[in-house]
Length: 179
Length: 304
Image (cartoon, helix red, strand yellow):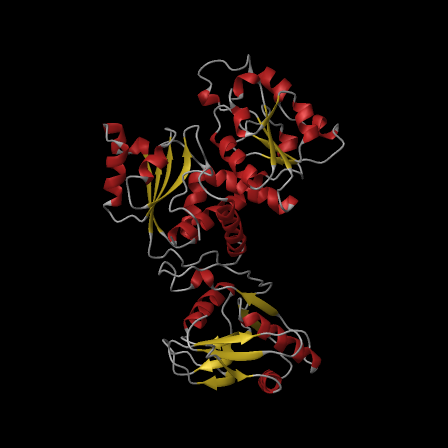
């Protein structure tokens, strides 16, 4: 029996993206000295979508990178198979304002790894975190997002998946355990 | 996930293993071109580099790869060790492992030394060359470098020139390239071609011009002067004249061939300087890729 539950679908999904974009514009204005970095692989579809929408809303082009954190993860050699994704970082983040983007903020360990990886590209002026889903009661580390799409309360064993559709059929699904 | 806990040779890994190593090496190549070229993956591991035979680039390349992965390193060379006092290989290695070493990178003059150790000890073993048997990381970096220029190697023609008889690079290259679907030939004087090499499905050519006309990539091996215990050819001058690759010969072919050499080069013997330093030469790229490939191998084995 399929006990998964859709917790966000259209048209609310698009509204959430739209709101996040406007929050970013309020905070970063003309995005000078600002860059957006997605955590590979799952932060990238969200960052792509946000970057595209920001461009449509008149934000001038600003640096956008994709950062893979596999080699910085703290669960390496602990039974989990980790395969690397591509890093596309054609800039340094020295003195830049960085918007770090991930789809689901869960334990905070990915963000910790991303911050370590980010330091290898320079010392940013500051880093803010944007997460589409904040699983607020599952944190292992003191990490909090600055921009949140939706906050949910999920049990430790539950699994949240963001499904990126092609024609506006994106949704966020909550599964009773990892699928 | 790799199908093996040790990299003793290319013969006993799968094509999927090779592709996984390549895919991981691509990411490590990006890492080593960053301002800070280091990742913390192996920060809780100690790697012993056991070199029972001389080596410069392989040892430096492994050591750099280990440092870039944040591993702790123990370096060992046979000349400055108890091996010269008569200690056996197994005793030497067990003593080092008793100091809590997690991984062993070994070069040894005896073919099969790494496979022997892999059956005896718990640590992961990486073969950095065992006698005239295999040199798997060299073959992986060679194929990785070819792939960067030619894309998928299936159907591509690669010829290995020179001293095939004494070359561990040649054997590992043959296994690796064949697993990737490439066609392989060897070319050299009959005395330096192993008698039964045809059994590996490899073509044999003794005419350098014909071999060059056939191939997309020429992987030129060093004449191993230290292993010429009997005379395999009359003189270096004669070898160079009949089997050396020079610019005039390449220019006369009317096509472009990628030139590779695992080093160290005997300039003016198997290859002239103008070929080694030409724009079609991948020699320095091979060295750069060597670090990325070795990082990938160490990383993937550490995760077993």
